Length: 230
Image 1: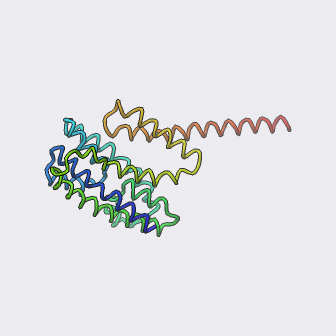
Image 2: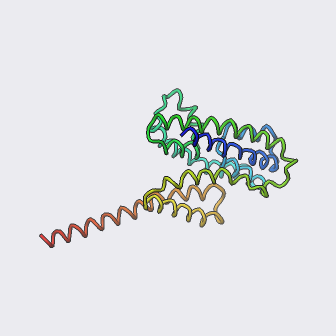
Image 3: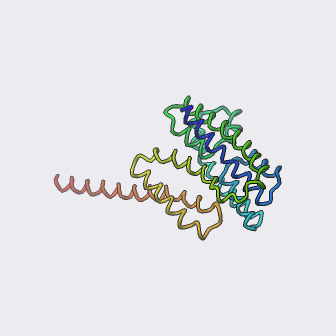
């Protein structure tokens, strides 16, 4: 668990370098770039914000897209609150570290003790390295050139997918994941940044509704068959 937590923290934390470079290229100052990583600390939302600004978008629209994309962390928090069981004094601090990677590591653990440890190690490692690499990226942006050619921003999503894939054990879970991917692909060309991710959240209730209806239909047919035999 410690090895996995450190591995996730290091792999994703270093991708903060790409954010620092991208943010500086979008015209944000060193202070603004570092403040985003220190205070926002949710990589996808940060990339969505600076990406929209770099494309010439309105700052308020860019901030709204980043906000909507970041709301997914609230749902992680609902699940982690009961699992981790932190005291009220610790919860506001822990909430700042509730992101994709810390949630995935914590939820993969078999008990509360290892979940707490995995969450803390991942969060601390990732937070420190993300902010250090953001600073280095922002300082060295002019020397690096075109950041899109490096593909560094793909490191975070790739690590999260590697964590998520082994957790999709049942056909129901795989159906939710598949429909979520389909919704993102369909919505991405037509909706503002951040909204396709929220639309993907509809995959869970849709699949569960279909599954429940199918299960009730099977139960009804079985009851009818038993009644006929009786």
